[in-house]
Length: 240
Length: 100
Image (cartoon, rainbow over all chains, first blue to last red; front, side, top):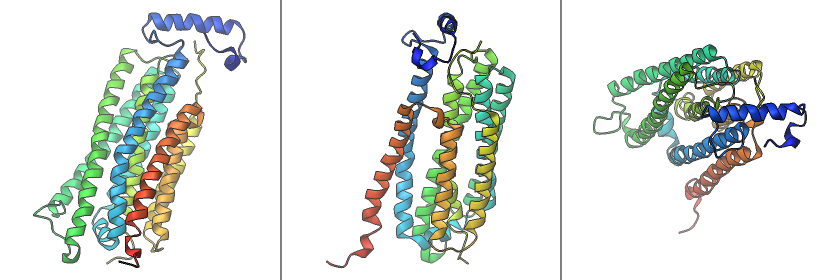
C-alpha cells in the first residue's frame, strides 16, 4: 500500500490506479514479489548500488592514499615524472568522459519518460564516448612503452629520479589501468542495457536498470575527475 | 500512465551542470600552467571536489534521493577522510622529528 502522507497531493482514485499499475507490473515480472511497490523497489535498488559504490570508494581510496604518501615524500620526482604525460590527450579524455556522463544522464531521463528510441540513441553515444576514451588511453600507453617509461629493467629517466619516477609510473599504470578496466566493464553494461532497451524491457515504470548502470558510469567518471589533476597536471609548472 | 512518484529532473539542469563541468576542466588546466606554489595542488583538488560534488548531486540524483542514500554517500566520504587524515598524520610529519 502506498503511504497516503507521501502522496496526499493526488486525487483519491490515483491510489487505485497505482495499485492496478503495480498489479500489472507484478504480472509482467518487473515488480519482485518481496516489494510492496515499484517506488520501494526502486529505492532499494538505488541504495544497493550506492552500497556497492562505497566498496569501490574503498577500492580506489587505497590507491589514492598510496599516491598521497609517495607524492608527499618525493615531490620533485613526482612532478618530473608527471611532466612526461601528455596533458592535451588527458584533457581531451576528461572532456570525452564528462560528455559521456551528460549522455548517460540524458539516457536515464529518456528512460524515465519511456522514450525508447531516444534512450537507445544516448546509450550508443555513451558507448561511443567511452570507446573514444579507451582508444586515446591506448595511444598514451603506446607512447609510454616506446619512451621506456614502463617500470622495470628497461625504464629510462633522469638519473637523479630514476627509482622514484618508477613509483610514479607504477601508480600511473595501476590507477589508470584499473580505471580503464572499469570503463571496459561499463561499456559492457551499456551494451547489455542497449539490448534490454531494444527488447522493450525498459519502460517508464521500470527504468531502474538504466538508473543504476548510470550510477556506475558516473562513479567511473568521478574517479577520472581526480586522476586527471593528480597525474597529469601536477608537473605542468616550475620545471625544465 | 506515469503514476509513480519519482523525480524527473528537467533536461536544462543536466545541460547547465555539463557546462559548469567543462568550464571547470578548462580552468583547472589553465591554472596548472602557472606556478602558484602550494596553491596549485589546492586549486586542482578544490576544482576536482567541486566537479565530483556536482556529478554526485545532479547526474547521480543524490540531491533528490532519500536520506538513507545521503547517509551512505557521506559515509564513504567520511571513511576516506579518516583513512587519509590518520595515515598522512604519520607519513607527512616524519620529517618533523626533533628527537631520537
